[in-house]
Length: 332
Image 1 (spheres, rainbow, N blue to C red):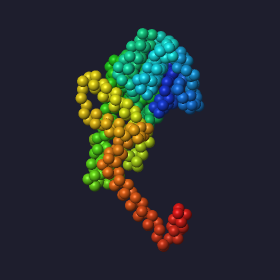
Image 2 (cartoon, rainbow, N blue to C red):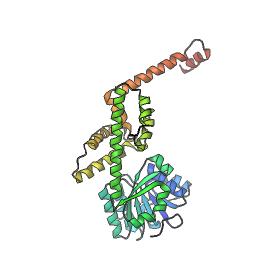
Image 3 (cartoon, rainbow, N blue to C red):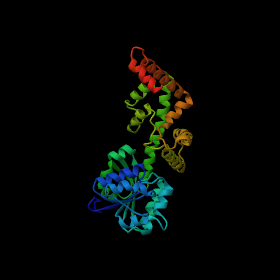
Image 4 (cartoon, rainbow, N blue to C red):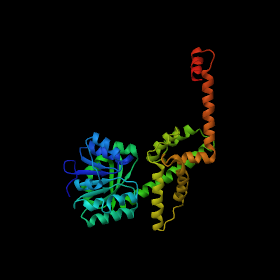
């Protein structure tokens, strides 16, 4: 199989969400011809500005590309895009390559692979490990399942968007490995949340605790940045809680199929589920805030900040400085 380089392969991309859009930008930056499709046409405008093309439909896109990548929300979205009379497999040319990058069930990946093979289309599941900053910087880790020859041929594409890529085995093994990885991501975040609350309850300064914890050997790289953001109560989404919730469901469903008990994962999932009702679009690290609230630590943190602010205000009201008094009057 020929190498899928920028001068030989015309790419199509479906799904311009937080991850998909950033991956698409990098493909354009590396010289690939790229056409895209998203249900929201407005998301394609930035692609046009970078030299890409927006297709009017999935059918139009599938008929014109050599390699099709997709980054979608869940199994249902993947089935809708690839199957049926309006799906990719209805019109794509035999010999087309599909690199399916969504985090879905391993069974879902195997089903897409099987249906693609029936019409002469080679499908590889290429699950993504990494958040939006890694996607922007091209430092993702890719976890692939499928044909070894295709994996080698797709290396130029992988190198444009990722720091490393690994072939895990046959179809479905990429998404299986992603569930392994995200088990550690989700359970690890819950463990960190509980450990931080323990330290806070026992009297450690929150800011200092988070700072030092991030420098220890037990914190994974994926969690280091979370601690810095949590220190400023920044829970803006890099990996939304709702997606972690979906992945927990996939993990536990796969475990049930394998007759495997995962008590720590089940416990983390319960906390995730409770927080989901309030802040599904915030980052999955909000479970730390949740633990602070249910243990009463959040109130202590707020009280300390309020006291510190009050001291700053009192200091600024010193009668020896008319400029400071004037400033306070303006605020009032």
